[in-house]
Amino acid sequence: MTLTLHHAPDFASTIIRLALEELELPHTIALADIEGGALTTPEYRQVNPVGLIPALETDHGPMFETGAILLWLVDRTGRLGPGPQDPDRPAFLSWLFFTSNALHQAALAMFYPHRPAGEANSDAARATAQDQIIARLGLIEALIASQSPRWLSPDHPGVLGYYIGILVRWLILLPPAPYGIDLADFPHLKAVLAAHEARPAALRVAEADGLGPTPFTNPRA
Image 1 (cartoon, rainbow, N blue to C red):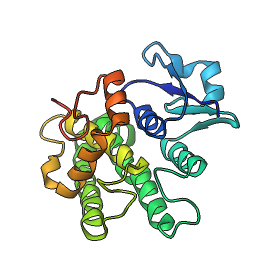
Image 2: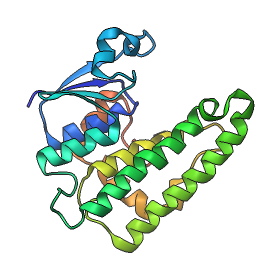
Image 3: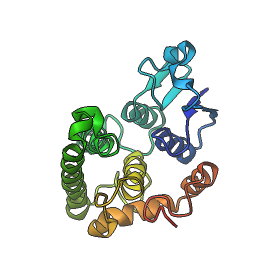
Image 4: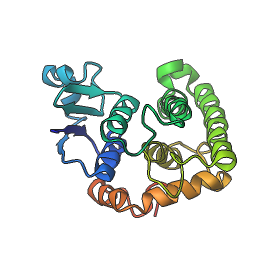
């Protein structure tokens, strides 16, 4: 399997890099100079027509969208999430898509509130995003507390743990005051993320991308 990840440190491509490292899949990192316009070139648009990262080049062609790449890796390797015949598959898919379509999008609205609402409505958009983020993390916390799913657990690494970990990192680091989250409000999720960030794969990526020793639970350390 020949894989090339188009990547910029501490962007969504870091989620894919974490999964690739956890799976120990040989891959090449193609660093993207975002400020230099790398994502707008015709060559890159052939890899990802929407001009974003991540993008993953595979033997069967390029892929984009974080959730799609993670799901492909799970299915291709049989690891880091339930396979198609696993009884846990329906729940896993539901929460993976929830993370991608609901939590990730709310985070983007927090960081770029002018995109959905325009500059004049940025404050209102950010306040709405804050409420959505707290509610959606609360649903994930309740899931872990009540069901202890194997695919989102301190005892088993998974793509969903890495995906949520990077989103939580950004939600601690990036929003302006008074917005953001306190991970202490979500103790079961914190335990999952603490276990993931301590994995050898996560430590390798954290060092390579300059994320610090505790990139999910205490990103300011």
